[in-house]
Length: 312
Image (cartoon, rainbow, N blue to C red; front, side, top):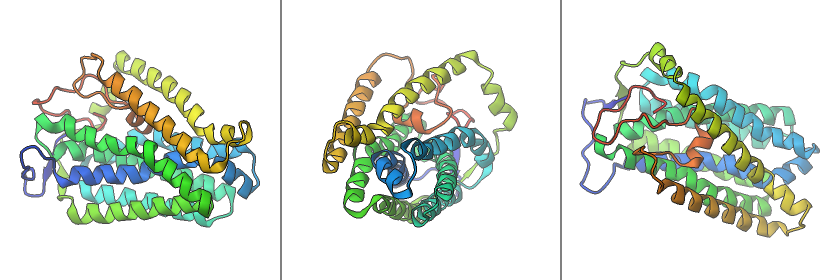
C-alpha cells in the first residue's frame, strides 16, 4: 500500500540518506522488541518473585506470541485507512501502558493479560510501521528503508534484551521493563513530533487481503516460518533458566551469553541474506518472528509500485 504525506508528496530526501522517520521507526521497534527478548532473560526471577512454576512464567511469552499471531492480520486490515502517525503513536502508547501495568502488579493473572494486550499493540505497530517506512521513500529505496526498520529488532535481540537483563540483575526483574516503557514513550513522542503526517490511499480492501491468502505457496512459507521460529524461540526463551538452574552460571554472566546468542543469530542472518532467493528484500528472521504473516517473494522489485497489502 502506498502512503502519502499530508501534502500529497514524499518528504525531500538528501541523496544517500533516508528520512529521519525511518530511523525513528527503527528506534521504536528496538524499544518494543527489547521487551520481547528481555522476558527470556528474567524468566527465573519472575517465577521466583510471583511464586509460580517456570512453565507458568513461560506462558507469559506464549501469551505475547499468541497475540501477535492472532492480532497481526486483523490489525493490519483495521488500520488500512488510519492516519499513519496517529496509529503508530496509539499503539506505542498502548504498549507502554501495558508494560507499566505489568510491572506494577503482583498478580500473575494481570501480568498475563498485559502481556497479551502488549502483543496486540506490538502487532499493530508492526502493521503500520512497515508500510509507513516504505511510503516515506521512493520505490527504489523501499528495500533499504525496510531493512533499517527491521534492524531495530535485530539490535533488540543482540543488545536490548541482554542490556535489560543486566539492568534487571541489579534492580530486580521490573527494572528492565521500566527502561523499555521509558524508551517506548520517548519513541512515541519523537514519532509524534518528527514523523511527517501521513495518510493512506483507500485502495485496499478486506477482500483483496483475503484473496492473497489463497495462494498455497504462501502457506508453505508460513509453515516453514512457524517451525523455524518455534525452534529458536524455545531455545532462547529458556536459555536463562537453563544457565542458572542446570549449568549454575552466575547471573551476572547471563546477559553476556544472551548477547552471544544474538550475535550468532545475526551472523546466520547475514549469511542467509547473501544466498540467492530471487527476492529483492527478504526479511530477517527477527522480522519473521515478530510479524505475521511473513513477507513473500511476490513483493515487487525496487522501482515498481508497492502492493496494496499491508502484509507486504
